[in-house]
Image 1 (tube, each protein chain N blue to C red):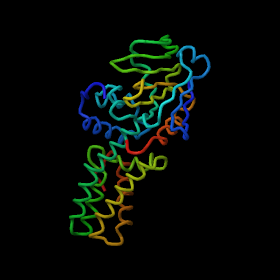
Image 2: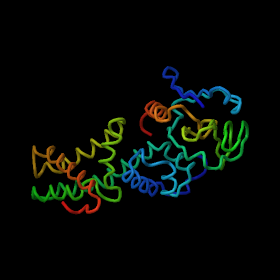
Image 3: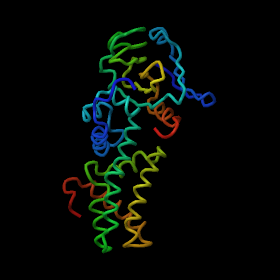
Length: 122
Length: 161
């Protein structure tokens, strides 16, 4: 589980990894400039696709997918136990990760928060 | 932007528009979009950024390729009755028929960008009815929207009106 918030003063999207997931993902926090965030989507189905190669973190299929993964030339950060609550945050090329796939408490609210914080004109 | 696009973005948008027009925004999952467009999930995200962004793109395309040409055709009809009949028969129609209507009811109340695009489509309809109906155009535009809604509610025989 992760907490996604927006820091309006510093124009950042902040992902805080909660509890033991910090251990599984080997990561506790990610910060991305809002200008490099392209969108957010509630996407339970993504967890059924191949995760690619785990580069760092933990992958116990059906239990937890957390950490850094490489798939089809792209870098993905995962922190998902319950796929029903998975949110995909797409990032610009300038970022380390192409895509973040994180489980959040309220996907609908998180997607709305991120989408309305993005600079217009996508 | 990484690997080159191995698919036709316009085709993907058209397929997505049909899904959104049929099942609504919430009712269309990314899985649905992946199967209907035949585009890999990663590429969909890479090109469009999010489901919302794809929906906005589909709505813009519907306005440009369907609503605009239709309203121009309606504006060129000379008889008032004929213009109204043409509007009822053809506004917000085409492959993604109802996309504007559905966006108006489902998304516009929560999404200012959708609301702006819907307003654009409705204004185009009003403008198209103005040559034949003058000041009554806004009211008749509402009649057209209502008629389209009723047509949609009777999918068994959509041509009967």
